Length: 422
Ligand code: ASP
Ligand code: MG
Image 1 (cartoon, rainbow, N blue to C red):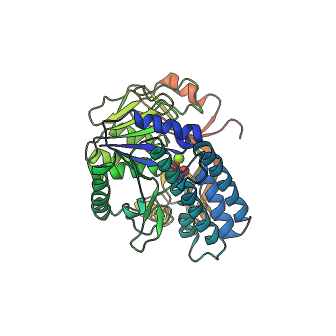
Image 2 (cartoon, protein in one colour):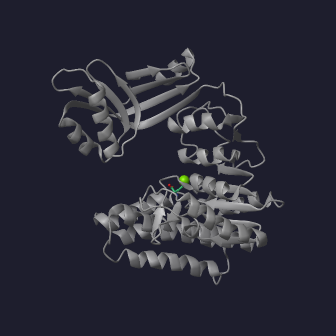
Image 3 (cartoon, helix red, strand yellow):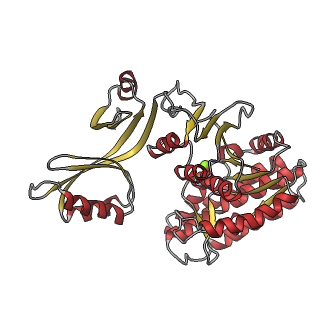
């Protein structure tokens, strides 16, 4: 049994959904668990609905209409029979959401967000599942909320592994005896009180890894619009090269430094059971892609990873004393209270600098730090990481950018820079 994951771009229109069916048909000898994300940019569009509903700064119904029209366009491209049951399923999901946003919010924003945004995955999987069935694939739709059990950290839910493993084996295991494809939603889960949760943006890769782990899958394949894992984002680099093979370790490092090709949480469950991960192109499914496993060779290609919207914060003692252990532990505690991840840090005699993602919690964090320290900050920066660096490589990424902070180890160099146009 293999696990396949198709992201938003791979189901962004009717032609793309047909292509997914063609890819699945290439694997007639396999049992497949297929994980699907919301179609195209639906999650972003539903975020707009959630904000309008909660903060009342825009018309939520109008925002929802964009999502409805988009899905109707895809439905019409896939199903000519207007009495097909897919229309009832889709209308049911839309009406429920439409009613929900007429009410007042009952809890905090993160809770409401998950109830609304999760509908994107429910819609996409209903549509794809009906389409696969209509072209003769024995496909069974499963509600991920019946198998992925989480805590109630809305928008960033933690998986309850024992419960998830038991539910997945019982439900999906049994269905695979009678169906060649079991299809479910990425990104979403459920609390013990039956409320919908999400696993964090781009979390569908993680869902694929969770299911593969629970079911002891032979492999996971993530189908993408790029040929595999590249050594740089093609948005920034025209001549990006593909890795043939990567170790779990290298891929964790790449995602940690900000490579967006795979969700950072994906690797660990796979590594634990030594399940290989393939990243392949849905545009050229016959091509090799990148294989990630434990025995892969250390990559010699340098990789270039850009993280944008970075903030550099410098923390200085008010009384000119040294930044010593006590103040460092106090500073880390403050970052942890605000749940802010430090991407890079450096200390000197009288200052401690950290680079973080820009966040809505920045002001509160600074207020807290300012109670005990002098705090300076600089927004709109980029964090550039070069792994397996060469000197020539630096010129390629840094060109005329102004470097504010720099750090090197034997293999990895990092730069906090001001973008050219700033
Ligand atoms: N649809 C979700 C998102 O866009 C999950 C995913 O695509 O992996 O964040
Ligand atoms: Mg996505």
